[in-house]
Image (cartoon, rainbow, N blue to C red; front, side, top):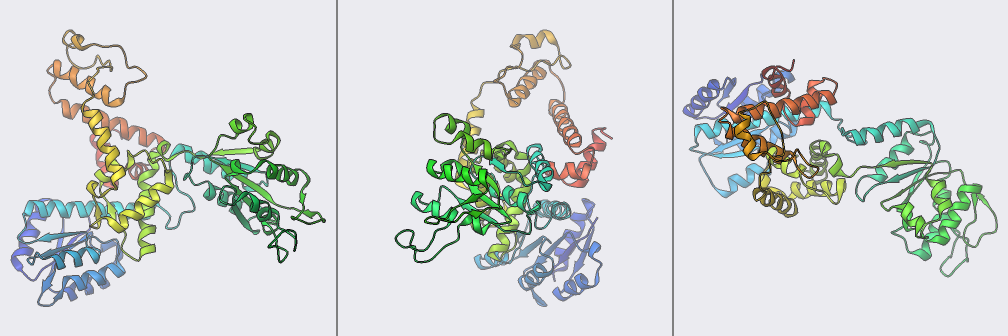
Length: 497
């Protein structure tokens, strides 16, 4: 286990923390001067770097804030806890602005200090696991089965020039998929040209797509190449194809059928060697039925269809995406990446995300700017997330416990039968099932209900995760949001070896 480094010119502070952390079997190394820490970081092997640095803010030999600034340049993921006997606003603000994990005013409660250091250790371990398992600049991300299906489809299409129709709600990443299809296709060396049919006025869209000849209409002072010509030999991405006017749908169909087109005002046919990838959030079959979209064009585009799942169908990916977007936001703003607590991540993961991945990205950018500390807590989440969580919490707190779950393995059946209800219905939830089982066990005077149910819940969850990852514990731990050591310990405790 990596050491916790303690820097303080006060010997009594060093002694108290060393003894308190030793009781928790956490190794320590103490320093008196900031220069000693800098030299130790320079000389020690990378695998022996500390898991946490706890530093005083004002010392005769130097400033903890100056040390913080130097450490964060070389070791941005090292949690630094700043201690100070000067509990003033400037110290707190400067600590957090410098990237401190937390600010600990003196005199402090030893138990609270140890808990804080332990939390920083856990965060350090989780950061290392995430860094080791997630590419620094991923093209696309997703461990959920629905996204794995999309990745497999992109792989199968990698040697094809066939037209593709991408469907999915707004914000699910349709253009990212189109980019990936182009990048991993025989046309990768050609241009990728995108146009949003809903964002361009109807009277300009034709010229945007096919170009125009000089003098073909008022304002056409020069010949202009359209998007089809710009994408020659490459890929043309037509976003929001469902909003394309019917007359332009006819021209697009002719290009797809004949492989050639005319500029606006032109008389010479231009050959089009272009792969078309279209995308829409609308139900094209319904628009065809209502006469708003040409059926023959629909079939031309719908050679291969990829459906992107909404974020609410891939909640497994939210922790990974959150970590990624917080990192991206920090780089864009030139600040240290913020971390998010387990409780805040749980609340965020339960949000419905009507704006899907794009909304999560915006939330992470908002948190990077607005969250007060380096560690994002539940209370720091945006109002819309907290409002939905509160509404669901209120609803659940007033929900009557309807015992749907039948379980004959616990308690006395004659006592339980007084609360017996029909078997679990299509409208019951797992929370109601847990409530039902808890009531049954309480009626039966079962001992240790908390331990029994927690063990069963953890066993089921870890078994499912290991089944999904093919028994790979590190990967299962990362997807569950727990540390690698915690997973190993749980597997042993629950007898899942």
